[in-house]
Image (cartoon, rainbow, N blue to C red; front, side, top):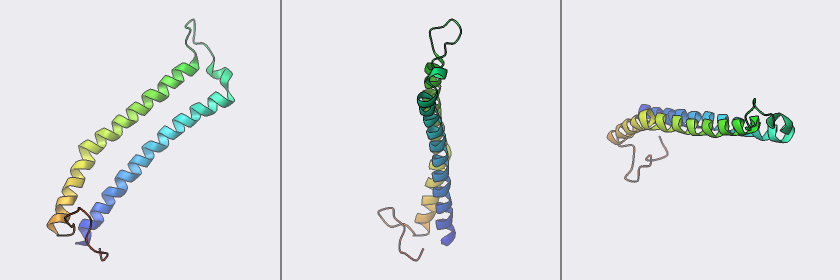
Length: 110
């Protein structure tokens, strides 16, 4: 019985760690951009060749696209792997009669 609960807790921890890792990447990207805006605006104002686009605009677009890609990565991993594993873990918990009708773990002894 405890093995099913332990496996479920491991899955929860994996999902949580993965999500926080991706959040950390987004925060670093965003705040790095904000620090550059505040501390080095002349660097972000540099023109690239003969184009009227500055380095700051390109970096802003990079941050936005990176956040979209990171969201896609989490969605793909969650839908492809995590949801499947959570479904199987919940079935094992139901089979062991460790989940009540509300989907919560039964009792404090677990």
